[in-house]
Image (cartoon, one colour):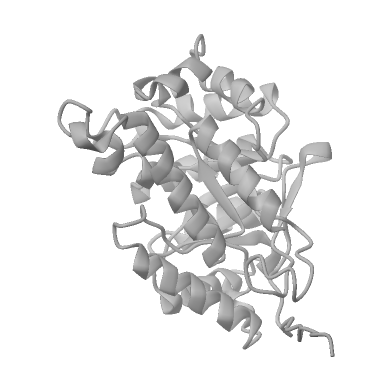
Length: 313
């Protein structure tokens, strides 16, 4: 007698969320199976890869990364080049320099950059701020207004500012909003409930449930991803059925394995290869845990994860 595997699709389903407009628009989520369990049911939308474009990208030192962006001076230049990256599905504009405790770049300058990128490119756009609650609140609102009609995603609304960000980004300007929490299923659920309480539609919410470079507390990330996905699918918990986006690159490229020079750690090998390996490992771990999209940086890492996704779906 031949073996007939028993399929196990779930009653619950992850919400499908569309980002961008036109031919380059993408949809994340929509599945009713665990990550890459295509033997149980089809994944209608393969996981997507975003390319980080920081307004401090000029400080990136990885040789191949600098070579890829050679000649780029503005965020729009970087974005146009990133569109050509093998495996890229969307762009993530990271406004690190807006931090009041850093360069304190003005909101007006950041908005001008976002508008320039939107005019120069056609890929969906995700916005990341500087992690300062007050500055990000103003920045997200102004960018959401300036890019009205572009169907962008703003990462992120947090418990401290979800009313301001949710109301301005999603309700006033019709954009998608990211719900950011730190590796805790209960906090993730609570924030989604609060955003829905503002009348933000579930189909306009994407979760950023926290991430970390592998080896740096990633076990907390893994358990959070597992618990959220099982609650969403097995228990049909509508408050946890939002797709997940994981910003991999800022963490992966900031740990010692990626930053220590070959002079300081000669036994570790090539510094850039270490950074690529860290980014690939972290992205793969997030995707197999349940992330519907990852944000990455290095062309070699992006190409590797694109192949990884293609061979699993």
